[in-house]
Image (cartoon, rainbow, N blue to C red; front, side, top):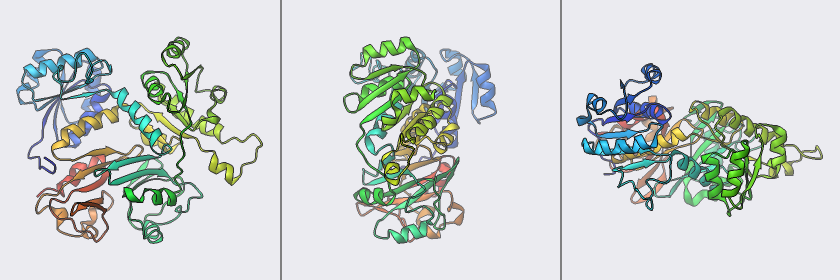
Length: 474
């Protein structure tokens, strides 16, 4: 039930520490869940011992003895995230027979778990099935289709939006404090909810100044979308051409999803893979070449593209190719750069990054949006587990924050004072951006006082969410 208070932590059994497993465990432990992990690789176990406070069992995910040693009869969830689809699907059957109420599995293949599959999620005894490559592919397509690769997230029944966008040197809001920004656009209800500066994410306050190069997350009612896009100088134009670097599962799937909507070119380094994809992806221009080379990117036509998506299996290649693409895109044939050309010529880049530590780094060094399969998969799992307490959970790409909808319980600390009067300790730790009052969503201001059972949208650093939640408990 929306707003229901959870009285105890869940007991969660995770199978597999590689890939999604360790990151997911960190998220769940930060969320005060009791986590037990079975992993067969002693090196991964040794590394995890220094990273997380969880019960670690060295053993085979298919060993019933290991399951019983983990205390399977006390488990509320089983999450299978090994690197083997067959093991993960079989684990769901074992968990079902051992009486674990809820089962989740990571499955890369799209041949399983779909409504029209031979074996659906229900057939596999799975409450949630996660396809990481499909998640990231769909997210890339959503970003491309939404707003010129500036991220827009819909919240609160689509009545509230969050725009993530950069501040250019000539932006009219560069150099303003948030107080001056609010005064200048006093007829538009909005909150700047987060700022990334370099590799640091800031929860801002009134005297915080916006600098060129900052990325901001700004929350506002959907009805004011055009006004916010205008004063943030966020351009909107129809996507016409997308250049994809890397023809793996993600690159091929994005090309398939975008095909016939926009002009798609896919650049693949491996000749055999490029030939195979040319036969499978009719209507997509397939090129063979190394996209980490400046001359190859130029020959692939990056200067004519609207968006460059780098989704090879190598972090450094993806980040560097984004930088090279932007460099090539900025070069004018006549050597003269005018304001009109600057406004017209802007390449948007989306990069797939395998290490979560690189996400903010990538966003701060030239990539407009950096995505990570592990983070997206873990977000879906955490959202499912938290569904009894949170109405929805979102993660802003490039920001180390989460966006959640919470409902305060009667006598909760957050209901005792107006927002501006809350304990100063929370000033740089969270922002309550919106509130649902008398059936309507509105932007929360400093003099807003929340009442019990009024849903709100909260933005806070991922690792502080458990502390923020305490404000909403009676």
